[in-house]
Each structure stands twice: as structure tokens, then as C-alpha cells.
Length: 382
Ligand code: NZQ
Ligand code: ZN
Image (cartoon, rainbow, N blue to C red; front, side, top):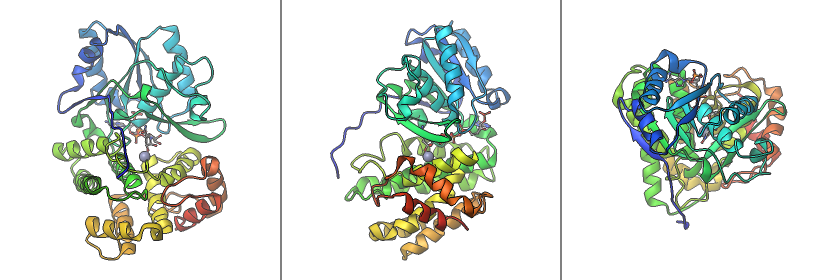
């Protein structure tokens, strides 16, 4: 096990009927005016917007709104909201939504204090060390963004989807009320589950050894997500399945599964970000296409770990059968498992690989260069 520092400063309030506590939590920070950021309207249809705004009113907190954050959020929206935040002199950002809204909130909170273009943070030209306080009401469990400092945004001009991470952009408080996820479309539940599983796999297969405790924790998280997702595709309002999936997804990427590791491999994520940047497909769908192909490509680098995965998760002895079983599970639950399934032609492989290679070489289990990325995509083709 490697040395590590584990320090997660985000306070989580978890459970049924907790959304209305958001105003009380924000008030504890002495905040009187927030920027309320949300997506394309699901919070208005499922009552989350009303619970939030009445909680703000009850606590004497005023707000200004920016809405319309799209899945695979874009830089122009971040720029627009930074202008509003400055003009309205807000003291905090309140993000109500999923990873797209929360990630945008982080870029806005950091951009508020930065005199240049906040895209510099994504390009690694500016190290974020200051941000407005961020509060979140999570409405879809997937990214773990509610309890980490990472943000992923696409610059529409260059077509690059990049990330930054900072201690300054951990949310102060996140509310996770699984009941608000009852209204999720089936495919969004599935993509969220896939994303969370792959976050665990990034750490599970990063080449690190002797993380006995974490290996078992990670296997438990994966199995719990699978079990919950299988229930939710038929019973979207099953509270225990929603709750177990939600907490698993948060723990998958809040620093816990990273402890003692090499920091995660992240190749599947880098390659996927090119897919969702170019084709605007959901992140979890892209991961279902890329990850089994990446597993095949790198399997020999740590065959014992792939054997263990096959045995522990699917009861298979053969490592290759474990990957096959994972791919079948993804397909059966409703995710695309090839470029073809997502309607992406094989002739686009060079273009996708070049986009992904902007950040290459990457990967800790196997270092991937442009040619490796192409090979992974070829495996993912059909
Ligand atoms: O726009 P609205 O109306 O909010 O609808 C959303 C959106 O269409 C809908 N939705 C959310 N909660 C709902 C709901 N619909 C009905 N009922 C609810 N309760 O779901 C759709 C997807 O939302 P989105 O926020 O895009 O989903 P997700 O949380 O999966 O976020 C994906 C983004 O996060 C990035 C991804 O790349 C992608 O851009 N990631 C962020 C990470 C991080 N910050 O740590 C790590 C991840 O690996 C990932 O890259
Ligand atoms: Zn992800």
C-alpha cells in the first residue's frame, strides 16, 4: 500500500426529505445571496426547485438563477454564469443537479476570482487555489462530483473535454436525497451506475498491489451498484436500491477508493471524454463502450487482478470470461457496448483517438500513446 493523505472536507446530508435543509446549511456560512445553477428543467418538474427555493426564503437567502446547463456541460455556459455571479455579487454557488451542473458550478466558483479565462485551469495553466463556496443538491448519482474537487467541461470551440481538480472546489455541503432520483429516466440511472462502477475500476486496475481492504471495499461497491441498478431498471422508486446506489456512487470517487493506490489509471475516462466531446453521448454510455475494450487491451499487464475480478464479481475462473461477463452485464442492463451500438462509424476511430491523445500518454497499468488508443477503439468498434 502506498502512503496517502485522506482529507475530504465535504459534509454530506443523506436521506429522505433532506433537500429542504439546504438553506439552513448555507446560512451557517453567513451567505446572504447565492447563484442557483441548474439544468434543463427536471428540478422544476420533480419538486426539487420548490423545496430549494422555499428553504432559501425561510432562511432569508436571496438568489439569482442561471439554468440550461446541458449534459456534457460547455464552457460558454460557465462564462455566462461567471458574469452573472460577478454582476450580482453572489457569495456562493448552489448547484442543483448532476455532475454536469456541479462541475459547471466548480468552474464558475473558481472563475469568479480569476482574471483570465477559467479554461486555463483545464489546460493546466492556472492552479485553482480560490473559489466561491459551493453547495449542492444532487439529483443523479453517477460522478461523485458532490464529494470531490474535480470538474469536467467541454470547450465547444476546440471540441476538447478536459478536467481540473482543486481542494478549493470541494463542495462545502452536499445533500443526497435518493427520493429525488425516482424521476430519473431509466437510461440515466443505468449510465450513472456504469460511471460509478468504472470509477472504482480505474482504481482497482491501476497496477497498485496489496490494498487488501480497498480491494474488498471496491468489490463490494461494484456488487452493490450492480444489484441496485438491476432493481431500479424495473422499479425506479425502490428507495433502498436508490439509496444504496447513491451512497456507492459517492464513495466510488470521493478519495476513499484512491487510498494507497497509484492514483487511478483513468485511460477509459480519457478515451471516453473524446467520445462525449465529439458525439455528445452520455458519459456512462461512452464508458460502457470503452472500458471492456480497454480491459481486453491491458489484461496481460496484471492478469492476476483480472482473474480476481472475474472470480469475485462474476464467479468466473478465467480472466477473459470476467471481461465478457462484464460486457454482457452492461448490454443486458441497457448500455451500448460498442461504437456501432452508439451509431459511431469505425472510420471515425482516428479522429476520436487524436482528440483523446491531447492528454496522452496516460494510464498507470499500461501507458497509452496514440497508437494504443486506436487499438482500444478498434476493439470497441463492434
Ligand atoms: O438537465 P436536467 O433537467 O437536470 O436533466 C438531467 C440531464 O438530462 C437529468 N436528470 C438529472 N437528475 C434528474 C434528471 N432527470 C430526472 N430526474 C432527476 N432527478 O439527467 C441528465 C444527465 O445529467 P448529468 O448531470 O449530465 O449527469 P451526470 O451526473 O452523469 O454527469 C455527467 C457529467 O459529469 C462528468 C461527465 O464527463 C459528464 O460531463 N464527470 C464528472 C466527474 C467529476 N466531477 O468527478 C467525473 C466523471 O468521471 C465524469 O467525467
Ligand atoms: Zn466517470
